Amino acid sequence: MTREERALRQEQRERARAIEAAAREAGKGPIDVPFLLLVLLLTAIGLIMLFSASFPSAYYETGNPAHYFVRQGIFAVLGVAAMLVIGRINYERFRGVAKLALFFSIALLILVLIPGIGTGKLTHGAQRWIRVGSFQFQPSELAKVGVILFFADSISKKKERMRTLRYGVVPYAAILGVIAGLMMLEPHLSGTMLILGIGAAMMFVGGIRSYWVGLGFGGVAALVFAYMQGWITYNSSRIAIWLDPLNQEYMQGAGYQTRQSLIAIGSGGLLGMGLGKGRQKFMFLPEEHNDFIFSIVCEELGLVGATLIMALFALLIVRGYWIALHARDRFGSLLAVGVTTQVALQVFLNIAVVSNLIPNTGISLPFFSYGGTALLVQLAEMGLVLSVSRQMPAS
Image (cartoon, rainbow, N blue to C red; front, side, top):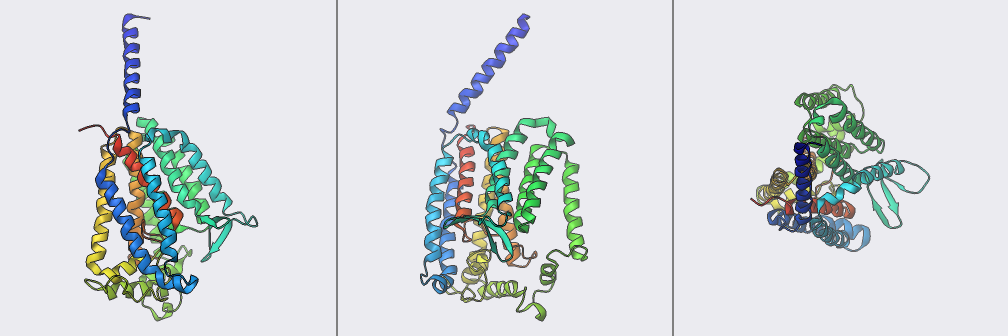
């Protein structure tokens, strides 16, 4: 071994020790306070609006008007605790569970489809839930986390190889195809769209060639065109309702929910009817405390209140991408991109559905819609972003 080779190896060892020392020191910095405050503020507002939207149906169904609020509040407390704990963990430690999280979530997506074992719960024609005693959850919520962790870990290691078809496109497209296929069997169209969007965004940030992104957009456009032309008949009634929501043919049928949502939004006007004073939640609007809670926001807080809430979401999303941009390494950046993209897509799709900008796909609004496990997972994911923020290089 020559002197130059020994010097090079010594330099590599010193560099590795420096990286390890930086990793040990990482996680000792302050968390990103603006991001944390935005998450806490949205969670608090979400709980208030959930109580306002749910108390009529909660009283009708259980006799306790605070039933949904109390249950959601418990999960909110657990979620905030999980967020703060995860935020103090060095995010590099999550590399070790990335593959396990992905495989476990795929196993649960298979399990929920198996009849006769008492785990699938049929809800509105969809089998999306796993029940364990009195506790139930959607495996699709864990699938989002699995995809984010695995993609961030795998993509961060490939660097220039992400520009090749073999390493940068095929393996990730195959994983997304398997998950999308399982979720469409439930069926769960909105969840499928969300996971595909998260995966595509992380692949794009990871460095795949731009023409693959163009082909992806082209495929989506072709699919939309096929729906519009009636060549694909799956959920074609939703397309018809979307195009003509006030058609008398749909008034009391499949278009009833969309019509009531538009009535709620229109009733709010500029300043709203006042918190708690909305009318559509009194057994008129289905899923008023779940997928269509933003309609109640518009009815009670008006255009001004709804715009302020959308602005808070926008600030959270921008701050999340800012953290991704200033992350210490590719893994941290991809984690923040995955979580932030999930929130961005979910907020856009939910608001677009309730305002009839796109056909009804049944998707919840983060931090607002009822669903304890979903809220817990969302807050835990915010902890991942906070963990990345604590390890940003000092500016």
